Amino acid sequence: MNENPSFQRVQQRKMLVAGNWVHAKGGEFVDVENPARRQIIAAVPRGSAEDVNDAVDAAILAFESWKRVPPRERGRALQNIADEVESRSEGLARLIAEETGNALRTQARPEVKSSIEMFRYFGGLASELKGETIPLSRDVLSFTVREPLGVVAAIIPWNAPFLLASVKIAPALCAGNTMVMKTAEDAPLAVLALAEICAKHIPPGVLNVLTGTGTECGAPLLNHPEVSKLSFTGSTPVGKLVMEAAAKRIIPVSLELGGKSPSIVFPDAVDDWVIEGIIAAMRFTRQSQSCTAGSRLFVHKDVYSKVLEKLCSAVSKLKVGDPLSEETDIGAIINRRQFEKVCSYIEEGVRQPNSKLVIGGLPNRPEDTGYFLQPTIFGQGENSWRLAQEEIFGPVMVAIPWEDEAEVIRMANDSHYGLAAYVWTHDIGKALRTARDVEAGWVQVNQGAGQQPGHSYGGYKQSGLGREFSLAAMLDSFTQTKNVTVNLVH
Ligand code: NAI
Ligand code: MG
Image (cartoon, rainbow, N blue to C red; front, side, top):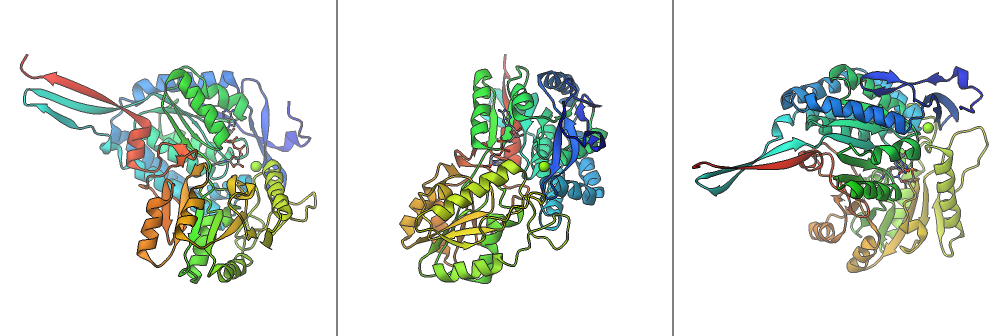
């Protein structure tokens, strides 16, 4: 049972199964900690295979009627969810900030706003779930229809939980599927609040939201024989398990995995907006807990010192602290495990021969404060360092000087990841050549923005499989195509 001594004072939440709010069948809980205050703020059910079975049963039952609801009505339900999320947005943003440690002003509020946009966007696309006619011959009518897959199993991480939940729920439900979602153990609360809103606008069982650990609740969900599609966002090692589970039953899978994205600065790009863009691309204000973080900074040697100097000056102005304070730019790392992991990379960077700690470094670690880290940059980096090859998922950037365009492309592509890339230059030829040659699913030139509705988002190489955020992604990820061919003369 729960070992937390303040157990009785902590609010126990329930999860959503078949339209009912339930405890786990096993009766156990998982604590949710606010990582900035290091306080347990709630306990959520510790779901297991039994709960997964109930949720999948409910989703199977709901599918029979949900798939028959006219698409525009399903879309309308999503629009209503968007409206209600909007009316409760400040409370939801505060909840996200409390459970994730992400700063309210720079992260949590924009995250809620993006989620609202996702529900609106996909809600408006219901009539686009259309097929095509195929001109086989005058006497044959051949057409395709887009049909939903059935029960979608979705597993999400903690770094932007509300948005990542929305970007799976909205297109999957719009297309007529039902869903069982497992939240991340570190950040289930805002997604449970979203489930509560969704439940008011859709029939019971269409969306079921479970809480619990990856092995106890996530794994049985992936391996449930009645699930028709796996949609996962998280680490590459778990992504491989997801694909193995899909392979056993030949079901489709979408994977949004890690990244180690290059940010390439050409010698003409030393403007202040470039510096701001590099910082945005690095997602320093989300403690760089982002799969698209531009964490390998390749700077042309002619401007290397100048760019690093300006970058450090701008980064030093970012305020790390209480996520709920309006002054704060950067909040806390999600949990002790990630904090220790990031610290171990910083230690390794400091030990690395020839490395230069340009800003940041290891924190003082008084036991009672939150998991705060300063933005950290190592200079004179080499692309072969573990720091430059592995996804740190924390505010640690490696700056690597380069001289020759072909060389920087080679280094940028020397990674088993291929999620995002950022290119900084005024020269259109250089920008477009780099965009052409870099192996990444998403290249941004002269900006470091986040995903927008309509954007075809996903990874090359081990960064993932499939796309999210767009109409094409909804059609590819959450429908299957049936071809009907009719002979008109017999
Ligand atoms: P993770 O991949 O273990 O967790 C993501 C989700 O998968 C969570 O809901 C978790 O409960 C679930 N899960 C874990 N093991 C599972 C299993 N065996 N079967 C089914 N579900 C399972 O990521 P974690 O441990 O939170 O973070 C570790 C590293 O992963 C980070 O340092 C970062 O490098 C990467 N990561 C990448 C993310 C991305 O957006 N691409 C998001 C979160 C983490
Ligand atoms: Mg937490």
